[in-house]
Amino acid sequence: MLLSISCFSFAFADDIAKGKITNISSYMAWIKENTNKEEASKFVEQIKSLPLDKQEKFISYLNNADLMAKALTEKLEPGETKYLENGDISIMLNETNQNIKFNPLIKSNLAIQYRRATYTKYIEIFGIAILENVVWVDYSHDGNSILGIQGCDAVTTRNFIPVLSLSWSGLHSWGIGGTRAYASADITFSVLYQGSVTLGASEIGVWGDINNRADGWIKKL
Image (cartoon, rainbow, N blue to C red; front, side, top):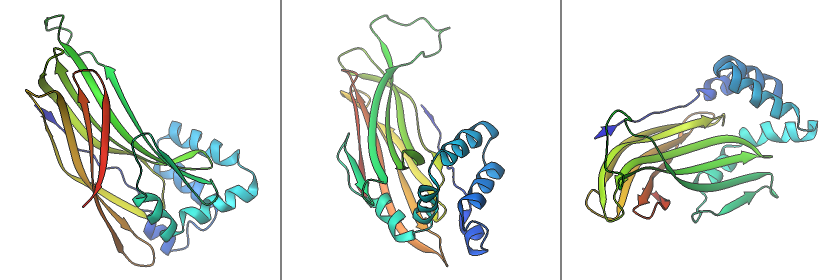
């Protein structure tokens, strides 16, 4: 069984404390310095497309530790979206289950399917993604039971929140012989603003089943 775990976090806190990220210009400059060129370019263009008043709100929201803490801990049902600040900030969950190719050099029974179930949490400001947490599991089944789990991961693919630091731990998977394949990991959040305030931890999980459905959960630890 293949397992991996990733962490993606920006050290915004020290920059904020030194007064480097106090407006949208310094924020965009930091993004350009610390993000790959293609992603930074797309993100900056999205920011520039906002009216000036929204640009100012954008950076004020990012620097608001209490508001970001609320966005991070807001409870959602699968597929649900919640809004803060009169709809300026949206928090949503999404699940997918897709067919994947598994080692095409190996011939397998045509009845066996290889799938990837993915569970993602997004936070957006004015429709621009500032946080993406993803948990996925690769598994195989024959329509009756889970035959194997080929891999899983828990990754923060985007963290553009200045006051947030996070880390993953405890990645594991299970479910062989049953009707669902599972994977989960623990994520620890800290708000780093004028010192360090630990926000807490959550378990984030995903499952995929023999009917090619997917779902997940977020549980406060």
